Amino acid sequence: AYIEVALSGANLETAAFEAGEVSARQTNTASNLNGTTFIFQLVGLALIWWAGYFIMWMIVSGSCPGLREYGNINSPHYIGHRGFWSNAGGLIALVAAFPAMMVFDVASDTILYCA
Image (cartoon, rainbow, N blue to C red):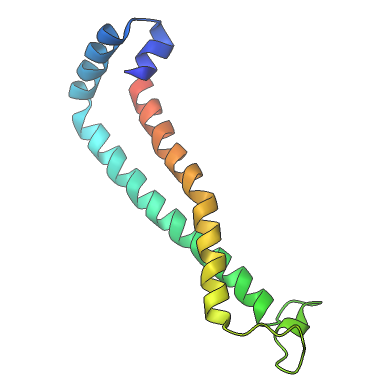
């Protein structure tokens, strides 16, 4: 209904009625779009978590040039518990990307409504 208010400037009651009619006409398309969007969000968030995990693993294991001290057990800068810190990096990436993935859902619904 908010999209209809923004597009036509109608009051909320009229916009809600119009949005209901549009939703009734596009039931199959909307359900397909919502399923596809949900899968895209899950895969996207999983890949983003993996990227954060991998980058943090590279840092704490000393695999990156210039950061070798973090992976050297004899160094005073050694970072233990690599799995914990890698998961923390993945979680931080996931939290940072979550709002963008939710906006993707709203944008796809808006495009469907305007079609």
